[in-house]
Length: 259
Image (tube, rainbow, N blue to C red):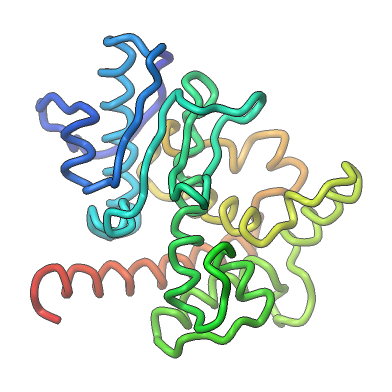
């Protein structure tokens, strides 16, 4: 299995991890691995997943339950792939899938899709559960009043609207232009805008893990403006930082028995 660059804390501390222990620690609903993955590839992939998910938890300041979305999220590796698709999130299954060779680097993107979907009926009163929270926000669904939700909505606003909040953002405009050029509706979807913005937020952290995320700074997509840039990127990062700090503290209080 191809090696991936990583700079970050030692989470395993010499311990052997596998997909069974990973599932147990984070309480994922299930983890499925394709039958064409060799034993050596399975062992290596488990280590990469473990480091990536622990890095994500550290970056977000959250808990294991945040990463598994309270035990509702499932992971598929090298199973049920789609031709030409490195990774995808399936709302019907509440599972994200990574292809064996092309999927690494996509975890942050697909995990945010899962979070975005998980939150929709928790932050809105009247949004269909098939929607993503970002899409429901854009459709003016009725919000549930809560400071955490306000912080999340600020993330959406910084991603999709300009600094004044009256016009499409630079990221949104660039994505709309690409969709028009390709005659598709994909890059400008609210859930895709937000997942790519989250990727940038994760990659800008001092922890660097190319199995978790890569390509938001130097890639064809970045050159086309499909990732946040400049002042907008900074504003988005600040909004995400505020949201996840609040969320992390709330989770730790609740799970620690203080709330």
